[in-house]
Image 1: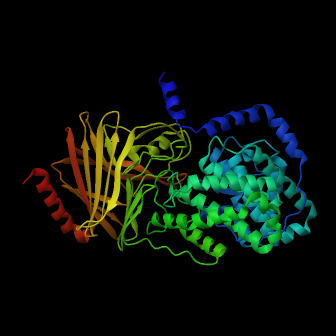
Image 2 (image 1 turned 180 degrees about the vertical axis):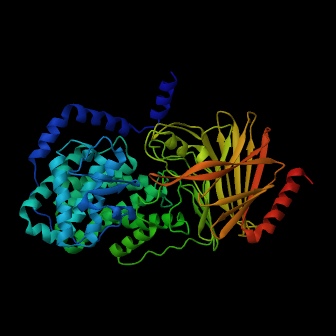
Image 3 (image 1 turned 120 degrees about the horizontal axis):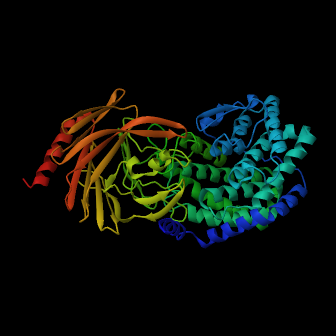
Length: 597
């Protein structure tokens, strides 16, 4: 009965299109797949595409670690060299690792340094894939890796257009396979998943449609793209899954689309015109022209001074292109550089729920928004009111990271409230997260969130409620004189049993605990945390930090545990060593208020 209720709570928020998508997906897979594969195997493109002169696309630095000529690959920080032929569907390798193998992103570095030798390397692995992955069989024909590969192959073809023109046999094999992959994808768009998967499907169909001058694909892709842009890009510019990593991936995808639309228009207007009346590509380009600067601005606000993203939600380094790479890509496509400097003081991204304090020495970002997309919560974490903090360009307080995409204890812990810098009430999670990407009930509901200025400095103010238990958590963060941070928590309710306020530190931090204070150092930089030891006892416990897939590091977290009553007030101060006296004065003033003296 309990499992049935969990399943009901998971399915009740799905969109009708997801139910219909799942139904048609199963029907196609179980009943019509042989027919679909037979149809796909019989088709071929009508003509050779023209060269579009696409700008090389950016990829994460990890992509450059691959040695294709030796069949040595490193994905998710796990290196493996195939001794002979590549076993594309080796069950001994993690599925996400195999997905990366099928993405063919490792062709992209070859497009930035074209040579006959690099063309032969790319040709060899493409031929090996075609030979060992017949239509409809294996991981490579699942829609997500299929979508990424289609786009990467088109970039490779465009970069090596002259080499393809000299090799008639390979060109025919390549184009036939690419056309059939695109046709197969058109049958299996992921309506049942939506979100970033569906966007990649649409993007790839549009690429294939323009590349092969296929009117129906372009028309369908443009229609879906406009709808998904309106839904997936929030008014503040953030992607609606609220993960800085996936935001970067989607932004890179928008710029890829902008790239091919501009290239087709500049190189051969008549080529684009052949599909434009059906696909309305100019309208699609206009939508992206409006969305891309907002998305770049949003991402710039969620970048720490070290140049990397904040690790909110499912986020990890070395998966998506960096902010610097994306701004450069935008400039190459659009002809002018995108300049974004987050204003000193405060930045509010209200629809996404992120609020940022910035000053020359400080960067502080807090999550005050929804946990994720209710009908697609796969990348949601229990991180409401969690924050990250850098001082003098160095990360000190961090979220624990993505964990992995396996059904493991690490994955569950990474999504848990215990992996974030927020308050844990009665050991409760903020949402009923289960399996790898599932979620049942949202236990908490946001009541108020704002970012304001005051005489003492800017402050964040927010509250949420465990509605079923009538327990309310209010958090205020004050950036006093733009020198120190004060974190105030007020928890009220009749069923309070335990309260734990968590602060996670970067694994390179050394921690020295004193009475009512800890000193935290990372290299030659440091911060101090102060609290009232009469109100809360402190404990430092080991935890983990997973900044990249496959890279788990030991870290430590501070637990502040106050005495529990129907109303609990807890506060602590984050102060650099040079402002420690200011922090102590604030603590003294707050103690007087707390005790009524």
